[in-house]
Image 1 (cartoon, helix red, strand yellow):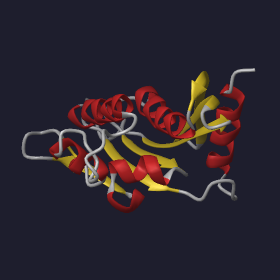
Image 2 (cartoon, one colour; image 1 turned 180 degrees about the vertical axis):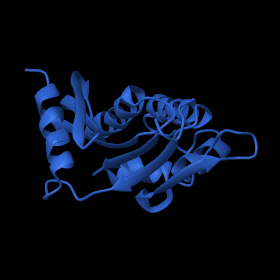
Image 3 (cartoon, one colour; image 1 turned 180 degrees about the horizontal axis):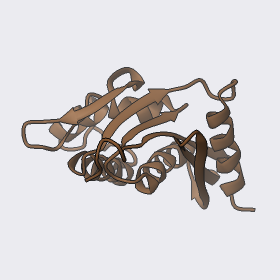
Image 4 (cartoon, one colour; image 1 turned 135 degrees about the horizontal axis):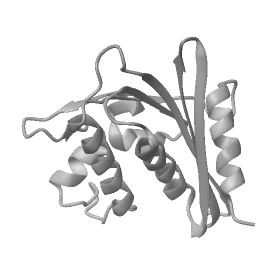
Length: 175
């Protein structure tokens, strides 16, 4: 566990891209924090030959969470309403613990889990394996002392972090 003095405020951006849907897709993330007035930034990207945009958006969130060190204040910003609304109500919010010390999701995940991973229309939830990876990453962070906040940002606008995550996601699309 980190001390208050060592605790970082990490801002992460994630994005996904797809050429055809389904088609070739990529994901990207940017994580940054300041230490002694110096910006520290690290990034990652990758892709898949046969995927969908939604899968790449979720993968970007997973990769950003996975690369973030545990025990810090982490904000993940993304332009995916689909991905963020699954995690937190209205696509923006802070995760906390439930009574059983698991992440307390306020988005769609809550209903899906209660309904046996079925939608309101009784259909299987698409991308369940990715959603469960998000649950696992959030659980790992919260149990390790991280705070997690998720924020929606307008895509392809003026947010430098979102623009860079988008560039990385497109770089991750296989040739």
